[in-house]
Image (cartoon, rainbow, N blue to C red; front, side):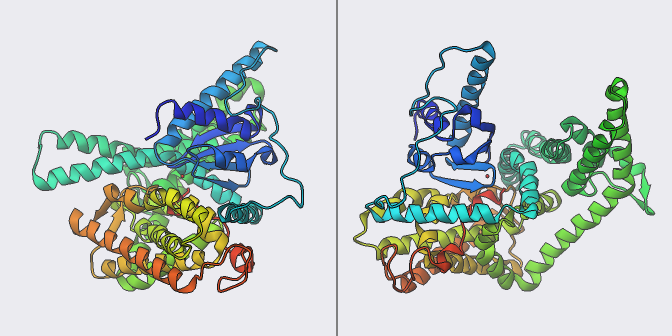
Length: 526
């Protein structure tokens, strides 16, 4: 377990390696990643970042630079980094003067050392060669993800990712409260736990509206004010399209749509209302127009969409359980590779809001199980490659907890074929969970973010905690086993850059499988 001194040291070491304080435009975190907005991504010394103790991996996504630090540590390192950024800004406002040099070398704003010259000697060990191939794949992924659609999906993820800690905390409390209620224990405490666990979900629309306005360039509190209309009890007296509205109708989708409308109205007002009247008219018109539009259009439409999502998920699992699980579990890593996984975050949140849990996340989490099985098979095959085996040993615990980036970028993705066999393991695990869903044993998650073993405290279903956990565990074991067997059978253990059963490292087979975040970020959104 890292000491309290390790977190300031990690933050201080990272600061100069990402171009210094002047290069950082924003610093936030999700479940496992420090997310940095950078003015100039080319200033990052990626190899230096990877070498910092505590760093599990790196993900490049357009202008957002993500450093994988793992659960718990990421929040503490982010807090330390924000403190350093605030101190640097305070020194800058105070005028020229000596500025402390962060540990790790270099002053804030100093560019990192230049990369090795072309033709320089390659790394000596296999793990370094695989890391170099992985870096090339990540760069290719960043270029391919620079499209308007994927940029929009990333912004949607930015709306929901900050909500994940509250979803996790309330989800765990809801599970604990359910156990107490079923067992008849502590009857004096369970009403209080119900209120604590349910309060956030009752008002999640307000938080979604606030974040939506902030991400899309509006005034956050106006977005939250308009989204609050969705959950206000008074909407029960409003009729739209011949249908009496219900509080919460449309859920998070309605809240997001309401906030987007508020942003549009606010921008329209800013360009037309005189400055002397702006402070009065712009907020009033924004809330009025967007609020009425929400009541008499968006709530009805978003309610229909939300209901369709719930019915579709139920039908998918009841009717085509194993096939649905096979497809979702097997294609999740390529889905992330294409940057389309972020579209799933609102779907997860909608299902949690409607049903109390999302049945999609446990299926998608099987992709991480296939990845773990594939990595163990590579470990067994490469008996004499101590560098790769050392990488796998250090990354495997994080992989078991759903943090898959170190294994993906450091092992399976650069080798090519193990990435594909990892997908096969994920497909098998998803089919296992989907089969039991078709039989009536539904497995869901009360929050998004964790996966692997870390998802057990958040599991929920319709058969009670023990059967639900047993089905999920069976899916993980199936994913581990098939990922291992498929990789072991098809991987001969060639070193990177050699021809053989796997083809040359960096071939089209490998480069076609771009970097992925694994099911930890649903994230996407973390």
